[in-house]
Amino acid sequence: MYKVRITAMRIACYRDLMEEYENPMEHACDMKEGQVFVADGWKKPEGFCDSAWNSISPFVMTLAYGGEGIYEGWMKNKRSAMISCNDGFRPVSFLLEAIE
Image 1 (cartoon, helix red, strand yellow):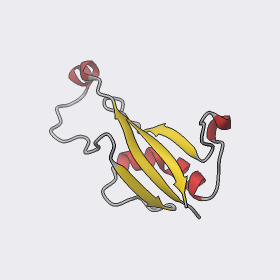
Image 2: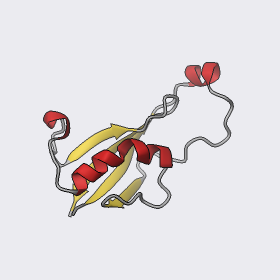
Image 3: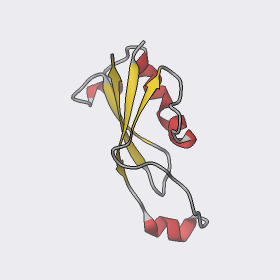
């Protein structure tokens, strides 16, 4: 089984949607661009967002167990994936990479 490096590549923020639809929140997301986590198989890395983990964990598991070419090979590195969390107001794009 491989470990999977998870890098927060980009964080979007849709203020117009937040102002119109979201209840005010003081503390919604702790991710920072460039932040790196390492998943050991199916185990969520400590400090990783639960909601984001729910979005990316199937892809982490696929890569951890040797899967490659996710989504019919759209990634240059076949042992990687670019997956975002399901937050419609401030989605985070994560680069997932299987590592030795």
